[in-house]
Image (cartoon, rainbow, N blue to C red):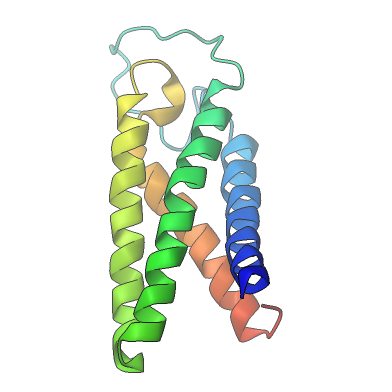
Length: 141
């Protein structure tokens, strides 16, 4: 049983970190053409020298939220009838998006990477959740 939990949490967290941190890094959100950049150019000038801090924030936010979401989904799957599973899983994911968006928003003043924190959280979570669905549907997971 312990091996199952380690595998379940490890695979989920590992894939989530790989997908979300990679996507975030690939779209250097600190650039002027960043996808999540605010349209208000008159906002205060933020340090361009944020370095790896935004990547570390994305990494740590996922380390915080992913295990909690996986555990809640596991409980829902094993306690409630199957018909509740997907609606509650979507609800849990929405809570994760909200939580991550709030955390990213708290870092918005330090770096340009988090100018649109809830959009960032939504897109990153759609990518990782969608990838998980595809892998499960293909029988890989």
